[in-house]
Structures are given as structure tokens and as C-alpha cells.
Picture 1 (cartoon, rainbow, N blue to C red):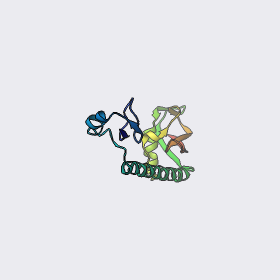
Picture 2 (cartoon, helix red, strand yellow):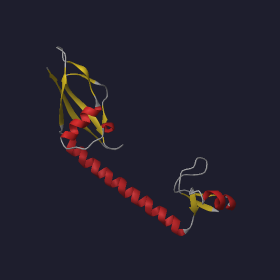
Picture 3 (tube, rainbow, N blue to C red):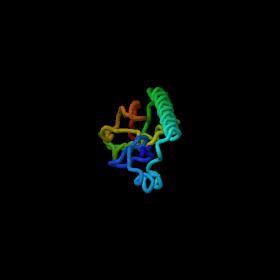
Picture 4 (cartoon, one colour):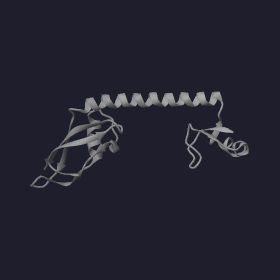
Length: 148
């Protein structure tokens, strides 16, 4: 019997794939447990529609990420930290602080999207990478100033 996989199952198949299984196995285990459904015309059409919707959603997210990357191009985040006489910070600037600085300017980003190559431990200007999607990233300037 041909089964359309609804879930990923190791050794059997991936979601959306059509696999051939024995009739009894399909009727007694695969279909009742929701792992797959019988591969009929309607089921195949439903999966095609779901894949098309997923592709449209990914494309929309990509376009939105590109627009956000363009808006982030000239953004500067100003952070103030306690520092010693030579400009060395007490502690370091984290990706969470950079994300909070961007949120204060109206950009909603998660701290996981901000990537620091190395911890910022000195006063100065730094370029920080913001990864919006796996394909789209932007760079923002982070200026760290010393407070007394």
C-alpha cells in the first residue's frame, strides 16, 4: 500500500514522501498512529498545497528580512559601561545588551540574532553582525562609551 508520510520517521521516510508499506502494517499501525495516510489524490493535493503555502511564507519572511537589513544598514547603538582608566570595561558588552539597544530604537530583534565575534571589553566602535535569516544578515555599529 502506498502511504503519504505525515511525520518524519527514521528508517521509513520523511514528511511529504510517498512510501510503500505492507497493507497490514499500514492499516494497523501507520494510519492509526498518524504517521501517514493512504496516498490518494486528495491527500497528495493537500500536501502540495501545504508545500506551496510554506514556500510563500518563506519567501515573505525573506523579503521582510531584506527590508529590515536595509533599514539596519546605518544604525548605531550607543552603550555606556563603567570602564577603567585605560578604557577597559568592567565586564563586557553582550549580545543581549546590543539587542536591547536596537529594541530601544524600534527594531524588534532577539538576542540570538546578534552575533559578536568576540566579547567587547574595551571602549570604542565595533561592527556587529545581525543574522536575520540564514541567508540575510546586516551589520550595525556599536559604540561603547565609558561612564564614571
